Length: 168
Image (cartoon, rainbow, N blue to C red):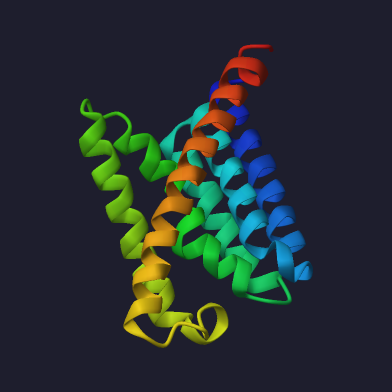
């Protein structure tokens, strides 16, 4: 099998797994955030296996199919607005030399995404946020949770790269 066929096959498989994860998130309301995050692992796997272009194709396919086919749109919207493109952005940011700059850019990306999500999806997710203090708590808590997510995401990607990819 040539490299392009292999990359396309991996991308199609990862897009399908991404859609399955988003489907589980859409039918299991308490798992929306978690399974949207799990779906982002398949974008990361596509970037590792085939490169940025194929990772982007998994993001686009998962986003489009999720928005078109799934019964509820909350999880696909979370995927579109943050979790889907974050593995690609993370890989690009982590190619920079300085760790402080990497964290600054990661937090910038997250806070811009959180602001967009808060503005457009306030009624769905943030109905309890109605005062300036609750907005500050949302952003502080969100940044802490994001840092933990990023650390855990890095560990899972490292495991995939070291054990799954090199194990073949």
